[in-house]
Length: 115
Image (cartoon, rainbow, N blue to C red; front, side, top):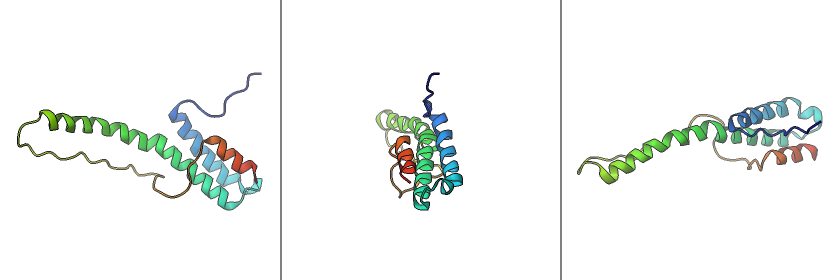
C-alpha cells in the first residue's frame, strides 16, 4: 500500500489541517503526556501559520491591485491630483506577534513526540 502524505499540497487544505491540528492537540495533548506549555505554544503556532496562509495571504493578494493603481496614478495621473497611499488593513484572526515560528509541520510532531 502506497504511503499517503500527511501534509496537504494546497494552501486551503493546509489551513484546515493546521486548525484541526491545533484543536486536536488542545483536546488530546494532555492525555498524550504533552506539557501544557508545549500544547499552548504549538497550538498558537499552528493557528498563526493558518492565519498567514489563509486570511493574511488573501488580504495581501487583494491589496496588490490597489498598489498597482496607486503606482499608475503616481506615474501617469493628472498633475496636481492628490495622491493617498493605499492602506493595508490586517484581517482579524490569529495573527499578531509573539510566540515562536512554526518551523513546519515536522517541528510540531518532534515537539509532541519528545514528551
